[in-house]
Image: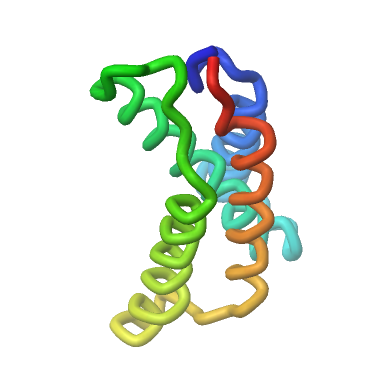
Amino acid sequence: MTVLKNPHFWLPAFLFWVNQYLEKIQNIFIPFIHSYLDDLLAMPVILGITLQVFRYIYRNRKTFIFTKTQILIGTAYISFVFEVLLPQWSDRYTADPWDVLCYGLGAVYFYFFINRQG
């Protein structure tokens, strides 16, 4: 199954879109959701799109999946950029260790539900 046909990919993508719509268009902010939902959904969406791109260019499309190491490195990279680098460069960003936990939980979701051969 391609990533784009996997309902486990579309659920986080849809929830991310709904949350952004509520915040940016409707100006509705639910504190806990505003703080952590996007971070929880980021890794399934980012890794899912990346996996689909790799499957487009990789010879064995149906069997290509990311290794645990690749998922860990991707999660560490996103955590470093958004929780270390960007808060140093801009007051718009805030370092929050709970965000790193959310990235990790999202990566676990990606590993078990999206990162499948198909």
